Length: 302
Image (cartoon, rainbow, N blue to C red; front, side, top):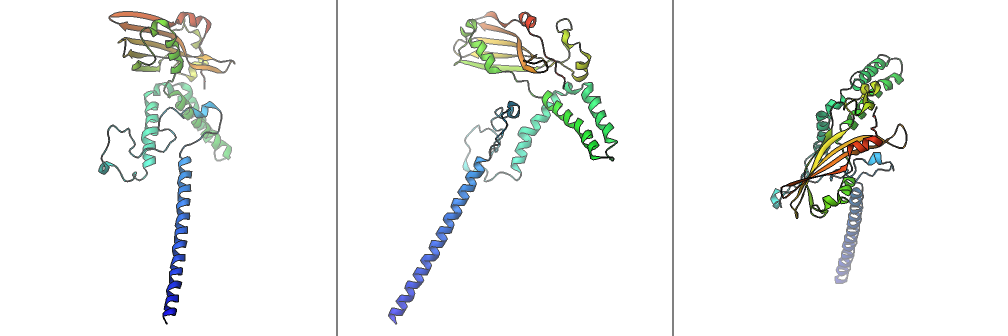
């Protein structure tokens, strides 16, 4: 009798051990699968552009949060928070809300603040009129529906490209500064800081005698300004105590071929005003009169 009870106890222990082994094995598989899924999701949080063209990568490195999942807080941390202040989870539709705040809303503000660039006859009259004309025949075939929608895609592309922030090559600009002996006398690469910045598109048309290229009726039908920009950057050096105001003028210039833009923000005038110990010194990095003799602006159409 005792042997029978002992045998039954051994069988029960063996059965329990097998169940525990199966449970541990299933848990290990589930944990491994969850880790693999998590790693897979982490890798795919970033959007990778497959096209080698730079046009498709124009946004990729302009903002820190671009093309990444948004942080939980959604803003820059200015202090160390206590544990009870941290959120346990992001709010519902949090990624959509952050996307609207950090990408959608700034885009709409650019459209509004630079709306004067879109009031040309081509955008205001021709594109909507063309869409309305083809819309009358949409009942005949689907092709007219496509033709009625195409002008609105063109209009969106023009609004998107004309309202972007003007973005010149700051690395090229700083390279010119650090190669000038008068500037490097007061400003070092390790101690220079940007104090102020302003750079915007010039409104209206320039002097007709200075820029006769813009007396073009076809071009004026499609543009309200030239694409030229002007502004300034103010620098300061923490060691020398000197300040410098850099006055900048840019214009689009043609490229290697006739209908190709070479550089949309070409420096045709660059002057530096340096103040140190009450003395004002002016340095001309790019002479406007000399540049305009050999380089002429490029006229954007569409």
